[in-house]
Image (tube, rainbow, N blue to C red; front, side, top):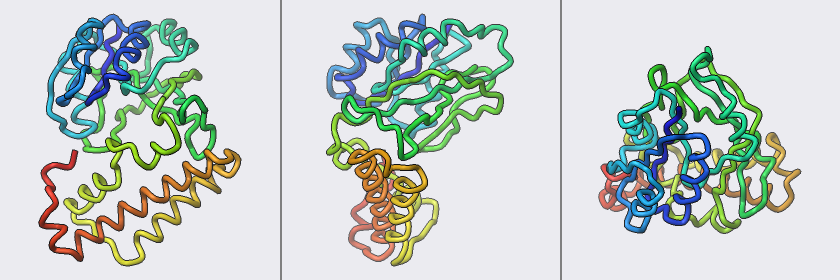
Length: 260
């Protein structure tokens, strides 16, 4: 038996299909919602999910909330814009979780722009640890980009499909993905500082890593666009951090208690 763990905020366009997907392998679905103002909660309840309301605590903290409400020892964590492929459903159904020596399992993540599979830029196979024994492991308690802190991991050669962006424009404009501002705030609070060269250096390094080292050049327009997006995000992260350091008016207007 497996419990699904889904965190949400205004995911009415995704949550129904996500619940249908995980219900193929889970007998319990827990949705941890951080204050959706659309129909997310209603749809989740109609689909039979247990909804827990929790103001957003940051990535790892929020994803661990479901563990307190899960009736099963094994938990499958997915985002609302992720789906299980048929091969992954088959693979999970055939796991002997009661007898396994692993404390968690990782799947390949197939990242998409629209209906296009991006195979380069480090976007595939992009193994993610998502199925875990909650009595042994959980998500690292960090505010962003958390992962499951497991040492004994089993790797399943099957895909979880990630419909992250509807089109190329969303790589730059999707409002809830304002990673650069969040990251800059976190860095500033931790006492990290930038200099005048930091935005340029980090932005350039991000582009080179994606486009050259991770073979974005082989991905045509999508590869170039993903590489540019990574560069812009990295550039802005350090430019915003530098702005906090040198512009008292901007710093005063920013609410560092409201990062998310």
